[in-house]
Length: 487
Ligand code: BES
Ligand code: MN
Ligand code: ZN
Image 1 (tube, rainbow, N blue to C red):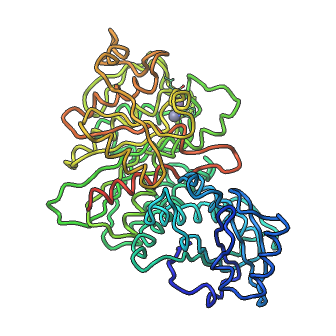
Image 2: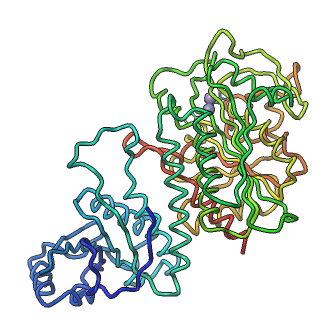
């Protein structure tokens, strides 16, 4: 759903649900008052009765004489309201609104000024959180008629000066939604072919988008031995999906985003345990996030050239599957000893990274649900950034802070490299227990020498519990990074 900015006076707004904020112990509320004396009197009564005080997390719903719902959200103390709190508040309110029979929701939270959050940042957060709360996965569910999502339009009150920001954030939110859609769909549907088809639809929608899909035969001819080894145990054949967006002069080097697209990760012959294996449908969330960022950029027609490359592969155990001990030759020519078929992400990424460099990109970011160790290190709050390019981690982290989609740097020091040395090939595909996230990054670094590049492990941030599923992270961070590069 597109979220629109509005400058409409609240009293003139015909939305059937109005969301407004109220700080703790604030006496008057100008928005409530603007909605009429009746509502103001009701509100005063509720404050006096201590039904509502504006504490963070509280919510009070009143009705105007015209039957409009007014959802008043407690914002707590202005000094304590941080980005997370503002995001959570909006997310919860919009999710609640989406459960009602309302068609039209208008959010007036930006009528307030926040002590700790700049207004453009607040605008972005409100749009992203509203879209997040509105999203509902329905693709493989039969809803009873009365449970259908009835929300049709969402608008955010904002000063004229913030309208471009709202527009941008709305495009970002569309990208997030696309990523969540891809991530949440089951592995029997969202297979390599499905991802290619999804990209095809994007290419059809925008005049300045082109698509190239390499099939397994072409990749075999090219010598992408690492990627193909991972895919050889599956009936769903691998594909390399290449989306190109031209928003700047053709001489301008593109920025490349490469996303791990393991549509299901069983571990292969190094089979994963059964418990929670279903969650490995999310192992294509790196792909989902780079496609999501691509959608956002195309939607906002950013003046950059963007290349999004997705190796889409399924990792299955089979009579034809690759095995521990195999030595394969990557597209770069470097040989890899496979010591664990479950360390498959780096195997497909190394070939995709080598391929990406043929387009002479200014910089490459790769995104991957690469290691369980990343969840141990940073939990579900931050994505991990690793790079050998000066300043690049800072740029990525800063972009994340701008949209509350945070990342944290881990070192890629040379001293870690020896953990992936072996006597039987140029490298092995695992580095042992210590620093598992970093040694995966070291592996990839061997395929990006001389290239500005950063690796971002999103194993902890791309999805959470079964109920919410794919988060769409870090589409917002990536898109903000690209916006910053364009500016
Ligand atoms: N897709 C997984 C990483 C993963 C696991 C992400 C659990 C989120 C939750 C990846 O392909 C994998 O299996 N990695 C192995 C690497 C190991 C064999 C060196 C891991 O993390 O256990
Ligand atoms: Mn794996
Ligand atoms: Zn994996």
